[in-house]
Length: 274
Image (tube, rainbow, N blue to C red):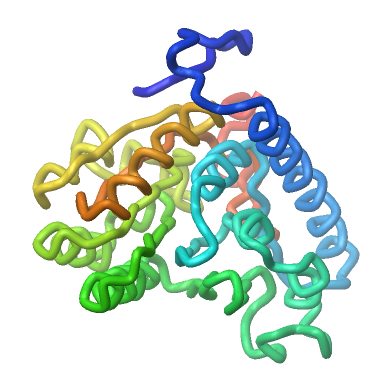
């Protein structure tokens, strides 16, 4: 597993730190912002003012570190916990909040569930609650970009649960065969609602699955924002230069329930969270 930071926050090797001071501050600012925003939005849901919400508590480093290297022309196909990536890429906060309320400012006009953001100027496409269905769409955009010779990269997010879906394998196979400019980013937070990762796959990791499709798979400490940023930056640059896809498995942990509709105490020992 790739790491840059020690548990106490020290950098393992100075040669690994390829982020300037401005970017370090921005990464920290965005992670803090997402943590505070998620807390506020979850409170609004508990008050009955919005219908649904999914937080990224404990996974901010994976979300922000992976989205930070993307450029304006790049596309994001998210899953549940990448709302922070939409804001990072340019979605105005007022539209983010409006989408959760489904009010007159909602760019989707109330046609999507709360927390299913979409913002065309940022190339951020709404996800579906049907697990993994965003992956073939991401691959389709990447294929179109290659055919048109557009210098863009597609970032396709998923959780560990999506790797058991057929769409995951179809998408990786197609991307590998046609050497498409797509980065598959799996936030392995150890739980797919109530299914633990130990029951998700018999393989040693998710990253290793990329080998079957002919491209690189990397496992990174998803709580180490510098490691995530480094691995994602290299994968994005490789894709943009015509080097094909990469599968990144970010090892993290889901601190809260799957969503505001979930009670994790029914299936998870809370001592695990502590």
